[in-house]
Picture 1 (cartoon, rainbow, N blue to C red):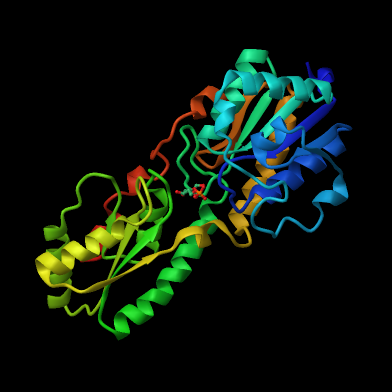
Picture 2: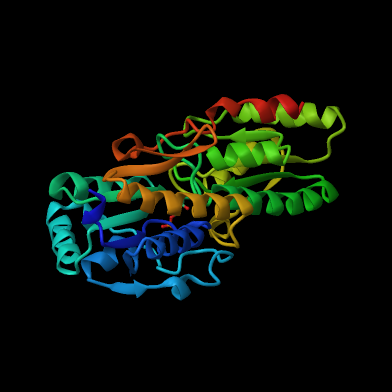
Length: 326
Ligand code: F6P
């Protein structure tokens, strides 16, 4: 099988994540070390549909391991859900002589890759790249560690002002539909509460927790909120807390700051390891796989195990922050 792969392409898709650049660097240099030609596809699937491929060599990926974002740019591409778009993509890839595609992105990006592989028997490998850490089959996604660190540093700063002015703060973190960031950030900052799911939040209980903290001598509260279906729900909670319980609070929605910044050591490390394993997997004839971290090992598993959103990576830690913030 391995002698079939002579040229590969790599793209980054969906929301960018710190760690994508280290992965691109590793893919390119591993490929070159194995005498493969490598194309970078600009702007994810949208760039693929536009035939926007660039040659990558060892120096094109120099000096990027420490950079956030993705040198290939990224985009969301709803058109790729249409079979006609995937047909066009397949045509472009074969016309350009590309034998296999590596996709760095989230579950949606993996679905596109999986369809391309199953409809056209086209070799694909997925590398999990999203700050949300929410892909089934994966204990870790590139970008999560850096995003958590960014949010922790921001909340430490907010804690200073919260204590000085004796306030409650709602701090909303990213993670569309996934509570992984909120959970880890809440534990790491000693948050008094973490609001995770979409279910109705019990503001009465929140108020009684805050009051219990005050009785115990606390003068501020940090409540970390997972953004849920859309950013901004913290404002509703703050309003309700004021109206029903006369507890004044402030809201800070951290937003896209969490997606930027120099990748952490873990994101550089896993980006480098996953990139190398992705190329090796192709050379070993693994044609519809994802390179994932499971139980601290980086392995190739069937891509179809990684097509849904999942909270599994962090769910065993639910409750820790609340237990520790008494
Ligand atoms: O990439 C994941 C993510 O950062 C989510 O946490 C967030 O809800 C979403 O992307 C924001 O997407 P966009 O940048 O397209 O608004």
